[in-house]
Length: 186
Ligand code: DGL
Image 1 (cartoon, rainbow, N blue to C red):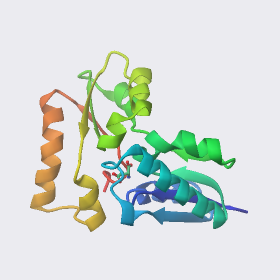
Image 2: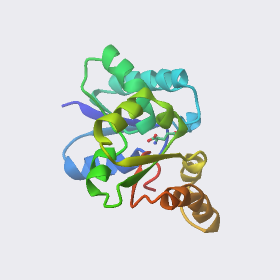
Image 3: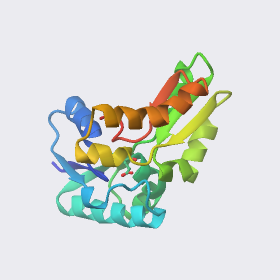
């Protein structure tokens, strides 16, 4: 049986891989971290599409019979192009706006995401589709992916960098925050 191929711009997708492993312990999994080209979120869409094609081709060559794009940014800009090119099932990840809107009591949701995701048409459509009457405050977080790639996950500097992007959302009244990038759960 073929493997499930999983990719991300770096180590962020390991947060997705962990869940796949938990749900499907019997499956063979292949993972590519494109850390040499991270972060995707600050790069042009064409670059992210090109890298996504290269990684998808590689994983399929290695025996993947389905693909998981474990990256919100690559899903936002490249999944349509990937699906148009490959016949294997391709599953993406998108910021969890729908459950956040269901959970908010204040009527304000904050979404932490990469700049590229925030600018994408796919993300705009997601907000229109699930936002309803909820106010959605979107906060791009340049620099966070680099911290995670370096393995800087705690300490004063990291806390300061986290506060820098979270505080404006709290100030706007958000009572639910969406981690709209697979690196951010680390
Ligand atoms: N893990 C990617 C995501 O979910 C990070 C993107 C980046 O490399 O900037 O969007």
